[in-house]
Length: 193
Image 1 (spheres, rainbow, N blue to C red):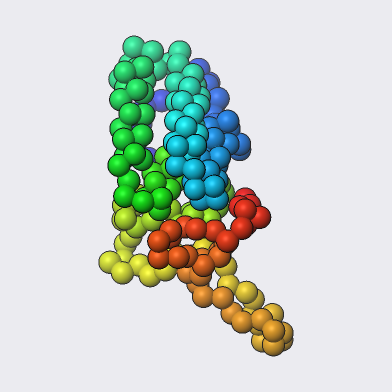
Image 2: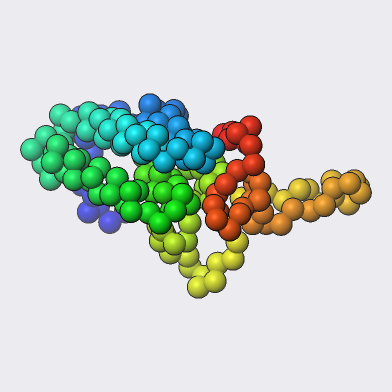
């Protein structure tokens, strides 16, 4: 530490009021949007749930620490929220197919999951989004290979049980992907966290 961060005490910032979101109302609406799109092929229902999810997410963020952000450059204004929501819904409306619509839902869900790595990982394993095309974080390797969707079986289990074949490292966890809908799932029973 080079000391550039400044001093902190018990009265600094939010005074320890951190956030570790487990299941917020916004998360529920993002999952409903995913279900409406993937299982029900209900594009308008998914859009309505996406819009609700964004509203709930921004309400939570805007209320959290409002006293400290008020009047600063960190304050979220109603016009900023409205503009962002309109931009997201425009991307959803203009997406070329359901797979790209799911990408919009998943990316916004991923952003709202800040602090909940478990659900973000499950989202990526379940839908395949966000992925490399979303350019969230560049890889150190120019050719990073398959993203791990699940862990390999223990070698002793595979060696001792002839009915088990070792999984591929990047194997899609919840069913095969089709060319049309890269995140299509085989059954609603597979939608587990």
